[in-house]
Length: 107
Length: 118
Image (cartoon, rainbow over all chains, first blue to last red; front, side, top):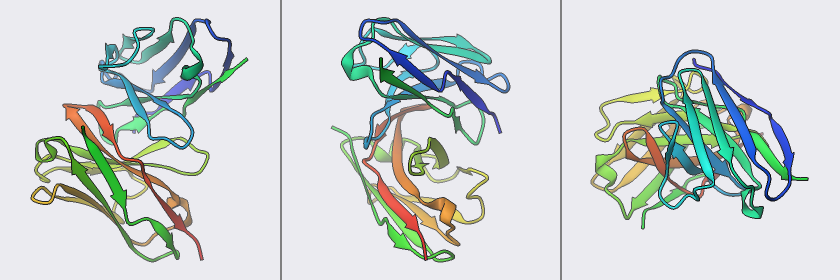
């Protein structure tokens, strides 16, 4: 199975900060990577598909980049509603797998 | 507006079975692959498995292979997860999720909680 490792696992930041989360795959996955946001007690919400395609309705402060084994999710200016846990997911080969998550909390 | 509503969760003893259902509406259910994703309390997300739009292709996580079966009834717009030989480590919130395009999972239910305990 393909392993995804996110870093950091925990991040403390302030409103307005630029935040970058990294997701590394144990083998090449082309651009078959998605990013999700999850808030407590809620289902995940898709932010980005195919490594860099912003989903409709997602604020433009979110962006994704990368290919093969290294990917990043960037929030250009952190807003209060962005405090949540973020997961990457590879969709290159079965079983599809998630990273362990990055919790973004208020500093 | 797409909607997915899971049901069937509850408390079950180890070794017993449970069947989850997911009723879909507001999108072309029969045209898209569907997924089950679970989340143990306080833990991360885990793909349980997926089924192709017509049910001809299925894939499972190693942790559930041979015990869980995904099926669908496109005439009823419903997805199922049959869970047999349940273990304590299967305790989790179970979400059904639907693709809106190839490898784009953008429809999610609210989840149903399964607790495996004696």
